[in-house]
Amino acid sequence: MRRPTVSIRHLQAFQALAEQRHFTRAAAQLHLSQPAFSALIAQLEDALGVRLFERSTRHVELTAEGADFALAAQRVLSEFDAALTRMSDLVGLRRGRVSIALLPSLAANWLPPLLQTYCQAHPGIEIQVSDVLSEACVQQVRSGQADFALAAMRVDTPKLQADAFCADGFHLVCPAGHALLQLPRVRPHDVGAYPFIHLARSSSVRQYLDASLQPLHVQAVMEVEQLATVRGMVMAGLGVSIVPALTLYQFRGPALATRPLHWRNLQRRIFLIQRRGHSLPLAAQQLLALMRQHRPTLHDMG
Image (cartoon, rainbow, N blue to C red; front, side):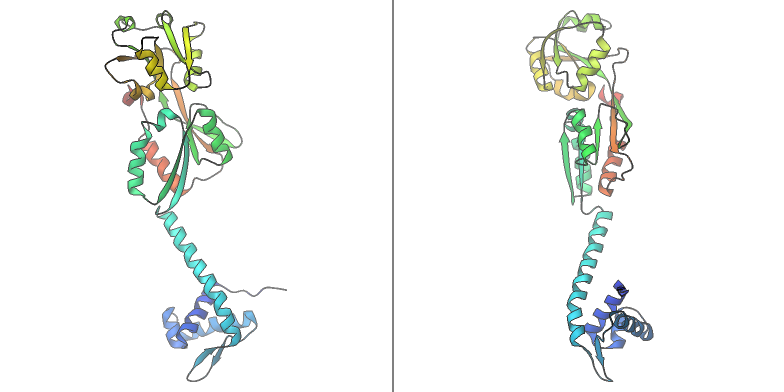
């Protein structure tokens, strides 16, 4: 059986007449001429196959079927109005949700001021931040848990795309007054002469360092998971280390010294990871635009 064609406009006309009980006033409420309004009511009754109103020269009343239909019409119109309000809030960035994944080195120092700016402009947006290593960043985008990610690995697959976002230099970290600081230029073999504090092999930092130092083998005295641990070990004089420029905020202080390294191929590239063919939610688009506008530069980090 073919279902009747009933539009939101028909329901709005029905609700107006049910409230006003007068064709002229109901038509004026919808900014329609009376003939146009009457045509909508007639079309609705014809589509439903039932009379919804009893008309007389003085009164307009709902029939029993009209009273029953009024309840359903009210629910539909209320949900429709609520849907329009929700969509208006999403478009106006008054509500919504953004989920991002990014390296801890970006999440801890560079991101917070940007989120402060974003949240002040859009207080109704819920933001979820995952500060995880590159592989976890990629996995969160792949699974849809994160809208986008910033990771130190390029992943171009049928489902994911990676675009260059920024570059990250590396700095020597050593105790203040260390002999390496007296050299006019620090080379890999210079660092190899001293005990070295390594990050775990699972980190992108370690992978970049290993590639740049080959075939040199540094005197690794320990491997640690956290940069805060690297700081503590270097401050204690147990060795020197090399860290990304994005993490230098953790190595400020009179007991430590840092120095930029300009070795060949020693530059960490950060990529924007997104699902291929998927548009970002409007709230995520706005946050990404802000992040692009204020992306880290090697000049800022040095």
